[in-house]
Image (cartoon, rainbow, N blue to C red; front, top):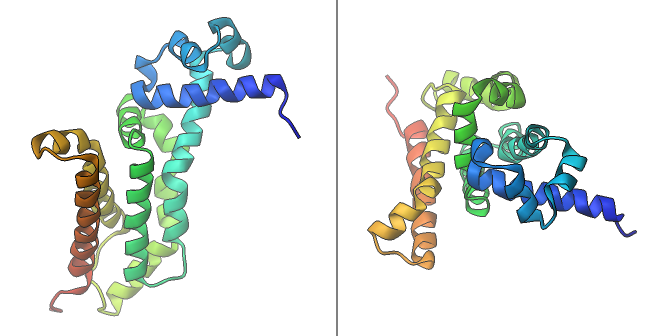
Length: 207
């Protein structure tokens, strides 16, 4: 079934807005920017979404779901910790590689409107209910791993992977890398992050 012209127009506006918001953030984006990216006039953009704010909220919810949904799915999978950590690192790596502007967008919006971010993801609630949180406590109680809170472990993963892509342009210029060289470097870095975290958790002396 073919989409109606109005549906096609609405999707064009949403896709254009998604790209512009990712590149410029809410404050740096104008309705004219979105209209030009979609190849339509501003009046038509406002007809479908009324305001930049309403369009942004719609796109924001979609991007936040992309950012967090896969992670929470892995956190609750019934698999061992080593495998789970590897999957979490791999998921974050592939997400950032496929959507290099997503991390900067999320960080900017955390600073601009932290309350909306907190309400959108309900991260603390999901962590408390997560199988992962209980899994960490159980393994620590058995003496299999160091005692660590889930939030600390997630910060270790996110910071070591996402900064890699935030700083991509800097690395390429400083080290005179091609895109292919950066990809190879990034993949090596991913392996180091997995080793670093699993060694911290599992390779320790019990006191």
